[in-house]
Image (cartoon, rainbow, N blue to C red; front, side):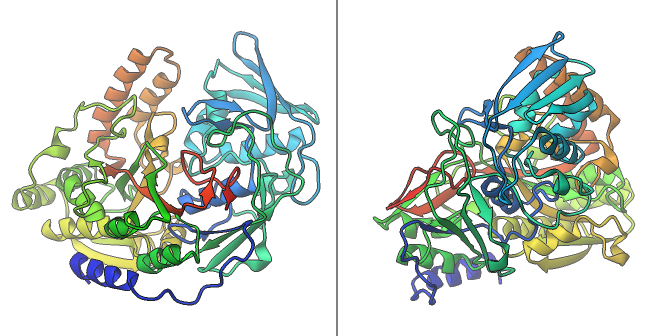
Length: 526
């Protein structure tokens, strides 16, 4: 089905009576439609944002991020910095309790940070700078550093795809490259695993032992008070079904309504449509650097030149003039590190006949390209169609594999050749919040097998990133970020696919929703 047929069918479906879905009779039960199923419950095992949303319900973090994207103490009362910035002493707040009834202790935090630090880009940098991480008593966490690391609170606060979630030591002892067997945290809601219906529903109940901190709620900082008794994730792969459910009140909140159906929602007086994440959503075509043909940087550079960002974002946003979209380099438009340095090839006209010749000259020999597409996430499937069409125009030997996003997330962990169940490329998205600096951008890492799926190797990017982390002034950081972008245009850790700003849609009776990515504390349902 092409895009026009899909939109026609979706719009028609939105006008049909909603299928039977049990309504919440209790005003303290919230029904939420995530953009995809929570296929993985481990907060550090996947970059899928549904898992991140799940993590922010179940787990708490040592620091939270406020609406200005500044870190604030969360599980900790505060910290003391000594020895010229090389010793940080953090003190846990009293009364913190895990969902299994055990007390949150400093050794739980130490084990959790070490596990997270093995996988997260920022966490890897923090742990590389750490000489020793210890828990001298039940409430004290001590970082003894090799060199000052002033961004320590920021690293621990970031509600990224890989959350620095504090879990019991017994779970944190799990190999970071294996999944934890259960989701036990100390966050405002506990995971009700016995009510999980894979591919359809996840349930969270209020953590009665949660102790909110004082202050003003702001994103993941301040008091994260759970006013709701229960949160239900209702997975609805069909966008029109989700819209109909929202219109009838069968659900309360749709995380990523299909852009082309937003005009229908804007006309409904009972529904609010607004952008909550001002940093936007940045698309990218992720390439597997371990396998041919994308282990060849010259071939990657041709793909980078060939992907039309405007076509990608038009496919996602359609003709809706109220949804802003933009081209971008390796740092999101509007972020402090964004620049035009080196990105002329991204914006050049697309002469596919010439690019096809360039691809052959770069060394492409007809190797099979296995393209994984998450069909149940419209913004992903739509860009995947554009990228697949580009590859066909270049004469690629394309094997387009349509699957649900959860399956894609599982498969991209494979480092096997395509003949043995591996992969060549896939489309994904990151929040602009995650891509805004070299410190936080996991996709921009060039640390090989320790990097995320795709596993790019670039000693030059890594050296520049290390230099950026030790540069204090903004002008110096911007200059280094420009150098990183120029180098990324050569090494192509991934291909930027444009940026847009995704609204959420929710019923007006839902109040207290904070700016940023979805969190469920402080929400009230009228």
